[in-house]
Image (cartoon, rainbow, N blue to C red; front, side, top):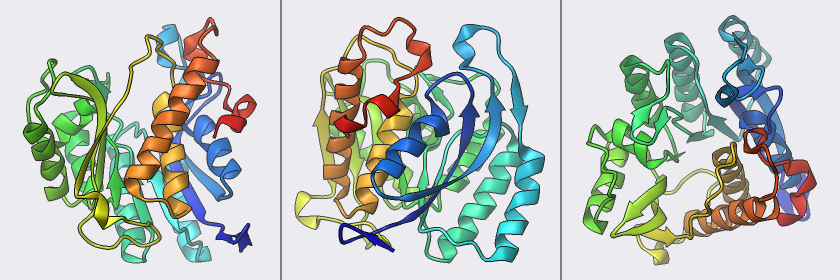
Length: 288
């Protein structure tokens, strides 16, 4: 199927569904759909609201996932791309890692958002075993986009609050590639005193993803950090990045576009009182 001379891609999101905030899958679905893709979902959990409210309810969907994946396999469902997000147990991480490995072998583009921590620490409930399983999942990723904290855990190197030098940043990217990831983007990085997003493109062709080898292997894209902490901006970044990649743009160009969109969305909604609600993306699709 084609829209405006572009092929419509079938994209599967494996992430949590939050009932009271525009985060996770709730934030990603409208963006990817607006960009012209057919989007499907496999929820890892139903969550009442973001955890920062202090009171919440979580229902893991591991049993549902365990039953759904064989059904999809029997029915022969195929996806052009799959993007994984938050896992709520070691069993979920294993199920998804095995599923992504099989999909990758069938030619599906695999995007991995290794949601594990921030600010130099793992999130509550994330175990070292889950970190190890996430390394396995990253090992079959065509692109993984950890934040700096998650990148350090994946690479097994210390988190440096003061940031990195450019050679250290390239070394971090190389360490994640050695896990098996073909390309890497690290967000919330600080390099030579500058807040930025850093990346390394793949050295080999990626199925369904354009590459511009003239841009060089590594890139650094600086940005001005806005003093506003909206929930879900990482999910928005991921969705915009994936959507543009699947529409034929290069990794560096797609990353810059995702950064610009997130900045514009934050600026438009800066007066919103409750930042835990995330950004009302359906009201801001014109900024995409």
